[in-house]
Image (cartoon, rainbow, N blue to C red; front, side):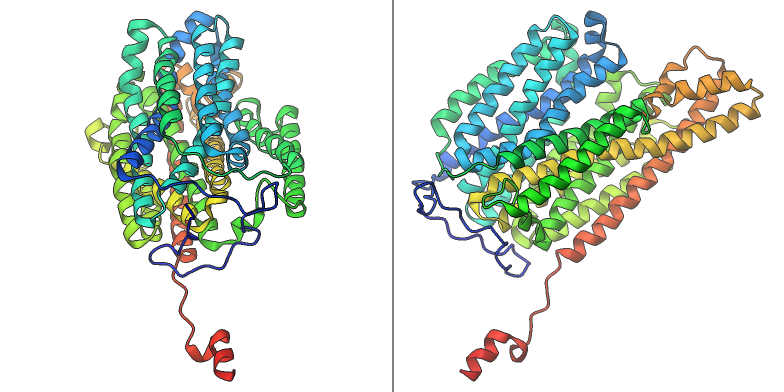
Amino acid sequence: MAHDPPGPIPGQEPHDPIPGSEPSPTASGGPIPAASAQAGAPRKGLILATLCVALFVAMLDNVVVSNALPSIDRDLGAGVSGLQWVMEGYSLIFAALLLTGGTLGDRYGRRPVFLIGLGVFTAGSIVCALAGSLTALIAGRAVQGVGGALLLPGSMSIIRHVFTDDRERARAIGIWSGVSGAGLALGPVIGGPLVDAFGWASVFWINVPIGVAGILVGAAVLPEFAERRGRFDVPGLVLGVLGIGALVFALIEGPAQGWGSARVLAAATLAAGALIAFVCVELRVAQPMLDVGFLRDRVIGAAVWGGFAVSFGMFGALFFLGLYMQDVLGYSPTRAGFASLPSTLAIMIAAPISGHLAGRIGPRVPLASGLALCAVALGGLSFYGKDVSYLEFFWVLPFLGAGMGLCFTPISVAVMSRVEPARAGMASAVTNTARELGGVVGIAALGAVLTARLSSRLTELLADARVPADDARRIVDAGTSGGGGGIGHLGDTPAVVRDAATTAFMDGLHLALWTGSAMLLVSAVLVAYLMRDRPKRPAAQDPARIADLVG
């Protein structure tokens, strides 16, 4: 079946073709053939369900693994640094390979790349479940990251091809995003009992039957789309993986090793050089892995920035919200997980609603509103301190989740509606890379703000308490370790030290929350401006109209 070119998003003007976005010829020199037949409504539902199940497993896995970290530490002797890499070994590989995964799907077929990704993710889960050492576990998490990078862009690309109507596609993306929220919401509920009953390996074994079922059903129902054969952009692939991987590594290690450490500076320098070279290569090659002209479309650029901004503000804030609940309010990890449920449940509810709105009025209003709502929620959270009950700050959590839910769907709708189907995998990979980088940058940047304020304030308070300078220095170092996460290690110190550390942490947290809130508010205004309708030119000023009249 031949796909019509994507029309303008409702509420926005038609756009000029993106430079370089015309379908590339196949190896034989002909146009790219489209899918052979359009799926009927029942089959579309089954296709969407298959894609959602795969996404659910990937989202669920990252949350339930966090529940298993204490048990992993006891069994494998991981230590704080080792546990960090159990979590971030996945993120590093996932972020570095997302763009590659999307491009592979565009070129060699979305269906096979999606199924291979699900298979690799399932195989990585088996490696993790059987791991008898920390090294084997981190290696398994890296394999999961490879699978996730192949899986996620292919999932959105298939949705772009199957759901060709703008409104229908917006609803499908809303459901797809809601399932992502469901995975996050159910993670704490499923993870704790699994670990308690069957041990930490069970959080990986649960992926295996679901992954196998997804592969079998997907092989039967997912449609086969055209392949874009031609010369593969190997230099772009190598430079992109190297640049993004080095950047994520520097952002992960910066808070722990220190931003001035040789390791972090070397990674940052490598990232800058590789990414500059990547852009230069992509501007020159005939068939680039990333069509840089894709980002010149102001609506796409605004959507990609919106994805970065919401991840920057929200994932950075949510990371420290967990520390606040456990280290300041004294919640257990399980209680903190359940306390966060209103936020993640709100994501699950808001995402489909946002998809419906984006399909009817376009993505501008829900995306800008979601960013603004997130900004208000972070600002509201900054008004609470160490002596507060859950019921007092409870209202902030649904606002956080609803804001995130309103954002995620319009971002995908905007990008998928402005790009031709042949480039859907690349477009999905770009938006997801921006989100992933936003989360990593947010944790690093807001962590740096929190740590700087925590260090200066704690030094002042310890001096006022007449704590000896050498002891005060050791306490500050312990309290600021891990980007402000070290105050939980001060439990055996005198009460005056614990009180000072908690007060300083809250000062730093409030400043970080205000920083994230300001970033989100500015982004909401920027997105609303860039996605606005352009005024229509009077007929007398329209060059095409003038040419017709003169002719």
